[in-house]
Length: 181
Picture 1 (cartoon, rainbow, N blue to C red):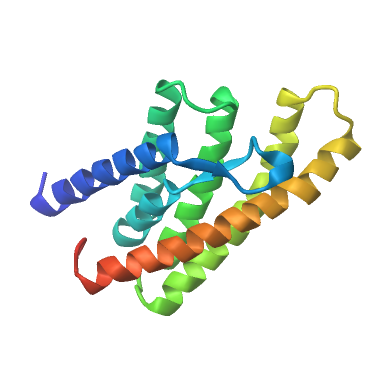
Picture 2 (picture 1 turned 90 degrees about the horizontal axis):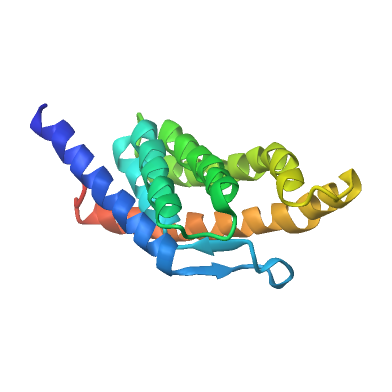
């Protein structure tokens, strides 16, 4: 294995571990009416991995972080909640990594973060149509759609906006210092 590839895997492992620790110990609700939906600062290292090392590493760091989270027994949502987190953040990191793969500029970074947020929001609609009946089997289709429209979509927009802001600031600071080059 060459030195550059080894360095990427080491950084990916460190970013996965950092993401897990931030997710495990610093999570907070965004919407008072849905305190079980939480966000955390663990998304930022995943965005950093995707931007600096590409979409595959971004998705793999997301997978490792979610596996660590599941194995640790954390999270109220159990395996379905962890899987939903992987779908959401795997989508976000994939889109960011694809858009910034060839050209790393402020414009492509912002475009990747914004489109990553849009993709996260959109992919979570069908994901929730599948997952909600697992948690709430007695809900009607109307209740499920009401939840998706009035709670889940606003939550994901807010989560994506926070991730975009923190991810942008973190990535630009790391770029300025040539830290992960």
